[in-house]
Amino acid sequence: MKAFNPLFMLPVAAITCPAYGIQYLSVEQAQQVLFAQATQFTENTIKLNSEQRDRIEEISDVRQRWKKQQAWKAYDGETFIGWFIVDKVIGKHEFITYATALSPQGEVLGIEIMDYRETYGGEVNEAFWKKQFIGTTKNSPLTLNEDIQNISGATLSCRNVTNGVKRLLALYEVVLK
Image 1: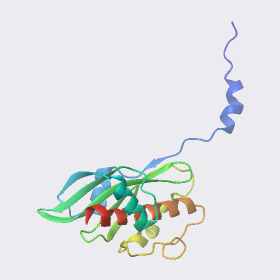
Image 2 (image 1 turned 30 degrees about the vertical axis):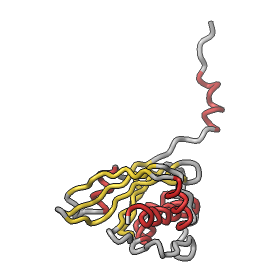
Image 3 (image 1 turned 60 degrees about the horizontal axis):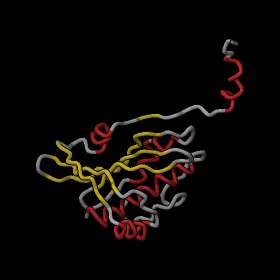
């Protein structure tokens, strides 16, 4: 019986792409970043029917792929202060998990990238890029290269996170308002 020679695997190892991924924030950490004043969060799993999903797409021009959406109501004492929504969009090859905070009136209070699994484009987690969304509503155009600055080398991540936020603003209008 011949001994195993690990060198024969070298060509295979040289052509495979390394796994890459960064978890920036857990759900609890993102909640605290986006709603620092919150004293409690109550989870609300939103189940969307096909009519609601179609309406979200009609408003945002972005397909609502998921039938369920993770969301939490944020409270400061007894006062409702907004929605915390966890979502994911595709980057170039892998999913980007992010959170969006919405005011009770449906205005973006902030976004946070939670998990980034792509090799390139992680600049979408930079503060200068994320702050562009603050104050936007369903009536904001949110057009990449016009309202939202693109990042060279991160175009797909920029486009898809922007579209995701657009879709969540439509979700607010259809279901959460």
